[in-house]
Image (cartoon, rainbow, N blue to C red; front, side, top):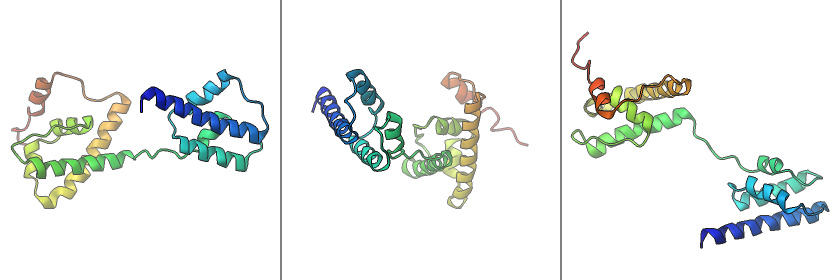
Length: 178
């Protein structure tokens, strides 16, 4: 089905829901410009969720709903907590150790993981970690991940530099003993 056809069918479906509600609430049909506002505001929502929200509104209100009232009655998308994302990324690093091994350096889709694996840990270091120390790696990784996000949100993150310079800088003090 073409994109244009999908948009036409969606508009028709929303118009049907609104028309039923106009009839139920015994309200005059709004002007096309106002209906366009409903269409635009409800654009990112599934038609099934819109129908369910309108049904709930009919059960709980005496008046035709504003767009915000319809949206309030729709299910809210689940947004994972930052600590969950950090934990998943730590386990992804450990999974990559098992999958690609010591000699192959993986690429990281998550930008924070990429920074941490370039500046905080070396790939060889993570590969050499004994399996019984993985729990500690995950805890340290999560803490570093959360700290990195805090820095970025505060605008204090790492300076952007060419990739070769970052690689050189990340290995500067590895041979220095305390």
